[in-house]
Length: 323
Image (cartoon, rainbow, N blue to C red; front, side):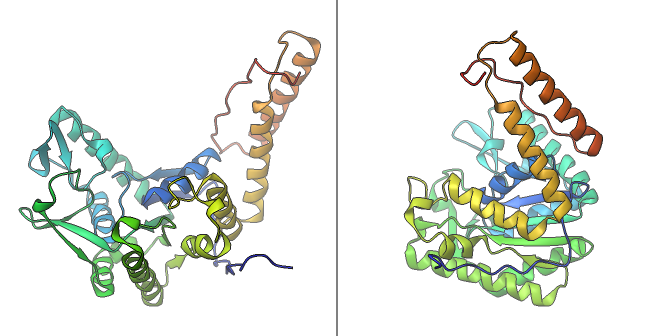
């Protein structure tokens, strides 16, 4: 007996492995998946502009990354005692203009190199609603709590998104682009407007799939809405997926995009993590020494079998009640 509607996933004609580099951009869901991939030793750069939700800002960031179009003082605004960029998340803002520019441009430089070497680009779109800074006549990635009177708000059309992607497609035509739509509902816009926004993103992505052969789609949004159709899979705000939901979507993602050999490697990493998380109550005892030897042997065997994977395991915790 089935107690949920299962989203059927079609395996793409490729598999991601540890030797592949990735560049990931978009919403906070991008950070969830990026953090998981990083914990398993994948080479990636995640959100070099910080969390960004709308497709226009994401595509614009790709243009700047490819062209190494660095930021200067004229690109920053000064508001509420902070220097900030309308293209970046608030984590890039700061009191010192030179330090803000250095942080922004260092991340751009790293992303430029990563993009050149990356085989996969993962883009998570969050919303079709955009804000245009009136004075600069530019769609922004973040309003930074600047008064709303300085912005116009509108919802993108499918044609807006298709046209914006068409401009960057030549920059990505030798990459595999994996699109997702964030499973986080933007409730501030209202229930109807959120559905409208997500539907525009979904239709745009599927039209792009039909136009370009290097684009694929992972249905994170559909998995959340259908397979995890219960508030026990949501955080306290009833909008964001909780850790159980994120883990479930992650497992569906790797089952779709990872080869069996990569999954076997990840299983080895999980076992090593469990060994390192084991708690030792009495360091210096014979049993503690034997366990330490077991861990070191397991790590040595892993490095022998996977010499190209650089992953750090935390030290054994010497407080606990297991040994």
